[in-house]
Every structure is written in C-alpha cells, then in structure tokens.
Image 1 (cartoon, rainbow, N blue to C red):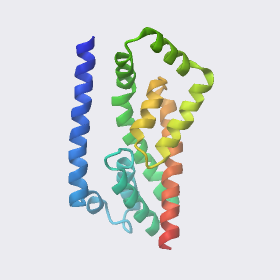
Image 2: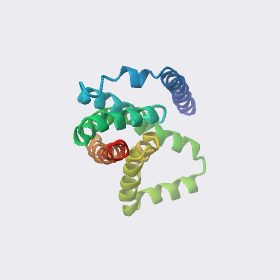
Image 3: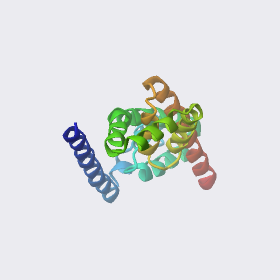
Length: 187
C-alpha cells in the first residue's frame, strides 16, 4: 500500500512540475491572452476559455487579466456566466484527480493512530462539514489556487453534484467581482 501511495504522490509531483513548465511557457509567450478570441467578437468563447484557466494556480493570473478584459468590453453578467461554466469544467478536472488522492496522501502521512483518530473526529464534527464547504468555496471564489479548496472538499468526500453546485456558486461570485472591478477601473 505504501508503494502505491508513493507512486500516486510521484505522479502528482510530475503533473505539478509539468503544469509549472506549461504555465511558464504560457506566461512568457502570452499564448493565453493571444489565443482567446477577440472579446468584442466572441465574449462567450473567450469567457469559457479564460474561466477554464481561472481554476489552476498555474494559470489564474493570466485568466484574471483575460476575464477582466472581456468583461470590460462586453457584459459582466455574460462574462461571469460563461467564465463560471469554464471554471466549473476546470474544477471538475482537478476534482477528479484530487478528491481521493488527497485523503489517501493524508492518511498515508499520518502514522500515529491517536493523531489520525483525533483528526478524523475533528473533520467529522457536524459544523466542520459546513465550515469546510464555506472555506473551500471562498478559496474557489478567490484568486487563490482552487486546488486547495477542492482538496478540502475532497477530504470531506463531497458528492460530485454538490461539488458542481459549490464550484458554480463561488466561481460565479469570484468572476463577477473580477469583471465588475475591471469595468469600474477601465470605465
């Protein structure tokens, strides 16, 4: 079992390193902003793409810029709605890879049974479940890496349908605030 956890951890590290390399390439070449359709001609497609990239720690900054730019040239509501749909799709990809692995990594790291039981009791406390929903959702709404919020929700073994609802709600709030701020600053 330990070798399986080590293999999963190694796989996750390789994915993170690969993602960092890709993100650096995106930032250095401005490929995200240049590959988005012109915000005047297709804010829906641009919002979907930028929203998808809004979810990862490695692509959040360029996505925020793109979403702000699109919102300032079109409807904030349209940008928020379609950006949120893209963000939920991105979060689902991350959720698929993280939800079970995070819990298994934590369990493998906790060797002491007493500490593991105390931690498990802490997370099973009825208010902790809702607190985790709120904090995980706020992290998803913010420019902070969604991976952290998604890990928290995955640790609680949230069902996919509830995850989609939380992701949609909080991503919409975050993207709407970005669009509103960009419109206020530019307009």
